[in-house]
Image: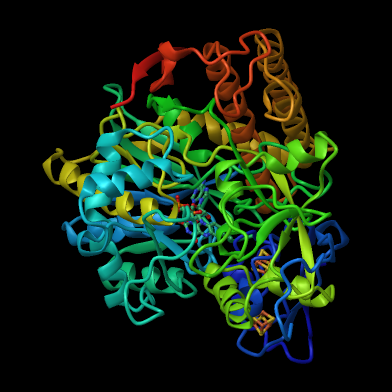
Length: 81
Length: 558
Ligand SMILES: Cc1cc2nc3c(=O)[nH]c(=O)nc-3n(C[C@H](O)[C@H](O)[C@H](O)COP(=O)(O)OP(=O)(O)OC[C@H]3O[C@@H](n4cnc5c(N)ncnc54)[C@H](O)[C@@H]3O)c2cc1C
Ligand code: SF4
Ligand code: SF4
């Protein structure tokens, strides 16, 4: 579930559900912590995290969004890096 | 039966889509004296491709670039300069700086370096045409500016049809209210419509097939503008010329021009000729020029290909991380952090994301007008002009101005939209989706459309006359099945199901256009016509509905 709401910090303002570009929360009930109803439809735009007034949302990036990386060969390494 | 809301929302100009182009169109139309409503699927504060920001704005400043001709040469060579009409590109170029100055005035940081600074997406030794800016707050600023001018924004309102009268001119639009658990239908009466619904995403499989929303552009943009404009009688253009997008694997995200690094294979060899020591002034433009490099290198066995930023200066490294935040790519930065990726030491694999329909779709003229009276279009859904955020903003303004002028000159619109035959027919159809029990979920439809498009009309396989016509037929068969089987439990699912039907229609139109182009050109690779036909240089394929049937024709670029 990509956005994870901390219910202790959430003040149930509804902003995250209002602005989500993917309707991940669906319609909300007034004065309740929004539910993350359609987590697999999250685009990970992070708007909900940025707009939450109390910092109650954290992102969990799913395994399907794993970045693939390895050590750089270092051919271009500069001094001190 | 679903409820058809009693209140009919009336205006001079209805803007469909509250993204970059839509908000700019709304602002311009309101300044032109029109009563304006924006119908937005999500919420205009945060929606579409510009949701979290953008950082490169194509812009012509005579004092910086010299003659318009020199600028045009560079613009046409850029990744967004292809398959466009020259007359629109010129109008865009001449008005782009005006937009930049307004955005600055309104509070978007167009000068994060204190002066006009052009960086990135450039060839060594050549003119730079991408203004570097910080677009983090762009959606909030444009929303505020629209509201200041009296624009009414109806959020959570995906539009599903444009309505025309017997003479074929625009009279309104139909939308769905998805703000509540149970959907209801909303009607708009308007003298003109500006469609600005962005590109067509979720049409081809994503980079990780099971994760349908892991795509580089906003997955809420699913081609309504193109398919509804087609049904209203507009010409659709260049849709067979799929683009190819690329970026980090497996976190699909646009914005590759912000990376400061060199694309290399794992043995450290760079894959392109452009840079050896990348800087913020000059990154590696290889993937703009050769977007299929990743799939090609994987196929010939010399892959994978990585983005290697390890050689850049600490200053440029910090600059890049800041630029990602202007671009709206904060999630990418956070995901890298969580995975322990340090771009000073690690290189990240890049891959192709498959076909994109960016800048392919509705045909406009230099005023943003389609060939349906009263219907205007702007932004990524336009098929004969591309300029990404700058193109959307500039042509959005032009379309908004034209729509307001059109509305002013038009007669009073008293059309009884509630009695429009399309409304009754759609109401019955949407209700049947909601009332059906034990039906198919929309995902089954969307996934099957993706699979058909990939195998019969995609760019990872070759296209051919037989495969494309089979694909066209199968999509038609799928539609018949889906019409009788898809079921939706609530407003959210109805929205997704209607998107999936839109995608299916877009796919059928693409098959038809691709059948017509009997040659190989760019990503349109025909095994039965494996050559590029010089007679088709600068020739565009158009699809238009005539007497209820799709007709395909050609025209020269203008
Ligand atoms: C991460 C990222 C970075 C990018 N960086 C750059 C950059 O630096 N420079 C650049 O030039 N370009 C960049 N782009 C591209 C740029 O964001 C787009 O070209 C631009 O946003 C297009 O504007 P638009 O109005 O056509 O579409 P959008 O801004 O996507 O707006 C479309 C709107 O329509 C709404 N909508 C969709 N369907 C419907 C419907 N049926 N009814 C009502 N509303 C609907 C959507 O919710 C959305 O609000 C980037 C894109 C992404 C994703
Ligand atoms: S990250 Fe974006 S798409 Fe995902 S829930 Fe938050 S606002 Fe919605
Ligand atoms: S924005 Fe934050 S505080 Fe408001 S409802 Fe969402 S999680 Fe709770």
